[in-house]
Amino acid sequence: MKCQEIIKILETLSPIEYACDWDNVGLLVGRKDKEVKKIVIALDASEEVISTAVKEQADLLITHHPMIFSSIKKVNGEHFTTAKVLTLAEYGICYYAMHTNFDTVGGMAELAASEQYLNLSDTSPIETDRCSDAGMGRYGRLPKPMTAEQVAEYVKKRFDLPYVLLYQRSDEKENVYDHIAVMPGSGKSEIARVKEKGYSLYLTGDIGHHDGLDAMDMGLSVIDATHYGLEHIFIPYLYDYLKTMLKDEKLDIVTVDTGCPAKVL
Image (cartoon, rainbow, N blue to C red; front, side, top):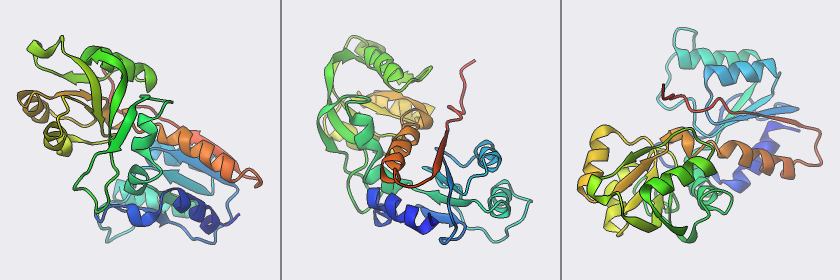
C-alpha cells in the first residue's frame, strides 16, 4: 500500500486544514509513493522511537507531536533533530505527524472525555485562540461529584498514570466538583478562559509554578497530568483506527509507548 493512500485515511479522520497555523503536520519526511508494509505509531519521534522504527524495519512512522517545528537550514548530523531526519531518510522511513488537527477533529479531547477515559457527560468544546476553529478541549460533567484529590486519583486510574500534580488552595481542599474543564497536552494558556466560563476545576498538562499559583489565586484548582499523561491515548486509538481501516491490507502495525519522560523519584 502506498504511503499516500494511508495519508488519505489519516486525513479523513483529522483533516490537515484543521491544524493551527503555527503547527507543522503532515508528511514531514519521505516520499508519498513509498510502498508501506509496516507502520510504527508513537506519541513523539524521539531517538528511542526512531531506533525502534529502524529495528522494526518500518516503512512509516506516525506520531502525534511533530519532530520538526522550527525552520531547518541544514540537514546534517550536527543537530539532534536533523540527525533524526537523516536516520529516517537513510532507512527509507516516511514520517507523518498529526497534531493540532487531531486535537481539534477526530480527536484527542473527545477521546479523553469519552466513556473509555473520563466518562464525562454534557460535553462541549473549549473555545480557544490557538486556531481558527474551535474544538480543542472539553467542558463536561463528571460521572459523580468528587473532591479535587478524588478526581486526581480517578485520572491516575483511568489514564494509567503513576502520578499527577494538584494545584489547590488549602481552604478549598474539601470542595466538591461535579464539572471539569479538560485540555490534553499543554493548557496553561486557557486558565483565564476556563475560569471565566465558571469552572473551578481544570485538568491539563505543562502547568508551571507561577501558572499554578496564578490559577490558585483565581480560585481555580488545576490537575497537571503532564503533557504525556492525557495524550498517550493517541497511540492505542490510532492503532485501532488503522487496524479497522486497513483490515483488508497485509500491513504490520506496531505501537511504541516509551512512557512519561518525567519521573518522580
